[in-house]
Length: 232
Image (cartoon, rainbow, N blue to C red; front, side, top):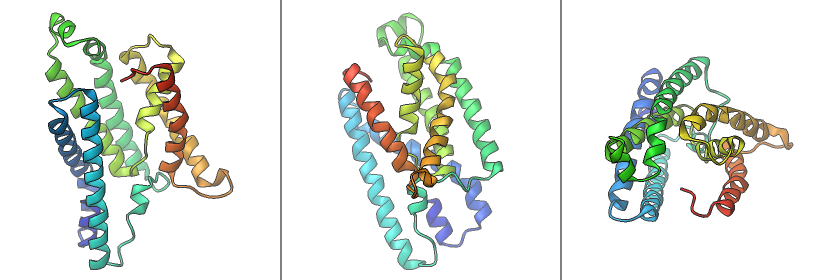
């Protein structure tokens, strides 16, 4: 949507101001679609629903880029956004990302104990006066808010949000709780910077940033699945 606004000559400052809100709205739409598709099944149905929604929006992106490139060929391709890019992120955008991530991360830390209880079972949650549906919705909104702001600035950087917490969980130990993992997961920025160094030419040639993070994710996720086949 942001790309379409630029293609139709909307002012750049206006597009930059509303892009996080548009990203949040569409992230909630995608989440709602995933929940509707997988609501009557188990966890695997939810995963399949996420895959379906992901392919749906990928198809929309390809179609929209094809149409926009014909209408306004002077607009640069969308690849810079799809591949992820942090080299051109300004200090103002960095400050916004830092404050938003810190605030929402702190909220996640506050409710970390409740998330730990939710991970056990709904019955235990009710016994602790925790409404599972309400807190799951709150968690979804918080995660969507953080991700939408990050993606609206840096583009799509694959798997970074998955591998960073698992790496930190491995460092802390198998008994680490959410309230322990959330603060140290901010060290995932080190993974991002290392990936950016590799993508910018450490190997003698440049690579898309999201390709580097995806390659790093392969052994991490494979190791997790081999050690914990039933990991969520």
